[in-house]
Length: 263
Image (tube, rainbow, N blue to C red; front, top):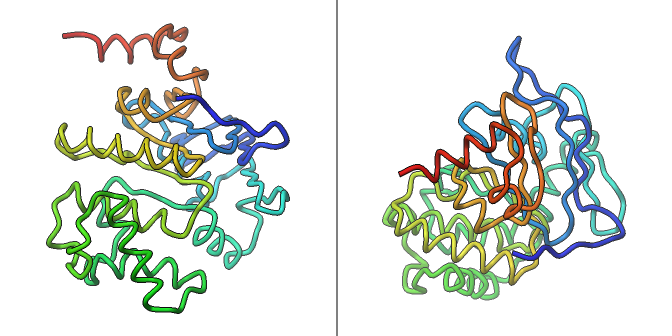
């Protein structure tokens, strides 16, 4: 993928991020920039700190040190962990979206598919029922869910369909930045491939910036412009995705790549 970069200011600036759980290091000395329209992949084995970084950057977990600066629609840089809780919740409803590994964590399972997609629009002020339903229907079709399923509850959907519904719910309000935590984890290979194609198309079409956590290097290669490789809470290598995966420099990255290539 070719990144779209705004030379004026990064959308997200992460500086000296650190999080500890008692004596255990979740992440430490994490720094990166994310530009409008760019997708950053964060890879590493289980326990490497990638999900801790994601949750800190997304405002879901308070770091022990460091800053996360977000450039809002006015051009002002806002400290994600310095704003008030209502301000952060509003950012999460408008400018940001989060896609969970388990779709049920991002859906309301007791209401219809259409209501799941329509609720974020109501949260930002939409009130006209016909318009909300029409927008929900459009997004169901965008995410390859039959319009005839609009009144069905997510409990009647397959795992892949639930994940596509979660994506529709996450993107319907027009966020600028999307956080994804293992978005294809736990799905069958054929379902993963279809979902990855869908995600790649939507990210490109909408010009979204995204931070994608994954242990799957194939997912990282397909979705991300740039990679952070994490080990034991630290970033050990960073660079353009193809560059890192085709010519890894750090021994740990070399091990990750070789383990995927081994028969």
